[in-house]
Image 1 (cartoon, rainbow, N blue to C red):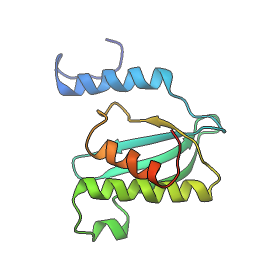
Image 2 (image 1 turned 90 degrees about the vertical axis):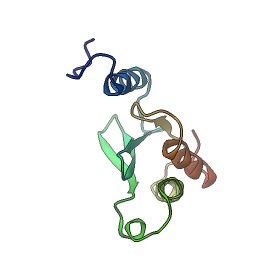
Image 3 (image 1 turned 60 degrees about the vertical axis):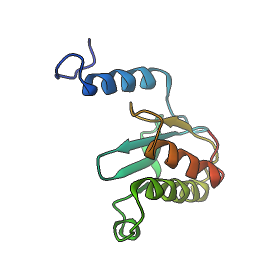
Length: 125
């Protein structure tokens, strides 16, 4: 496996690296449809809208921001709110359609909640 991950064969990390590699082969952001990248840790979720042709981040939101750090909501609810905030920031940056890059994470839980929140506020993907 030429992905560049040095972990035990058959582990969850290898499976995630394979999914990430498989997704990134197909998904690339352009000026017309930038890439919405979602990164999830055990505690936080981060989302960025990236134009890969220029290498610039057009909009971003994360659970590390002050209003989310003090929130008592659960992680899934916070992810939905982050998706809504990101969609608002994307609209103000002139972005209405994106391609979704889940970065190897499975499309469930917080990843799906963030995507649903972004779609609710008018981001198309």
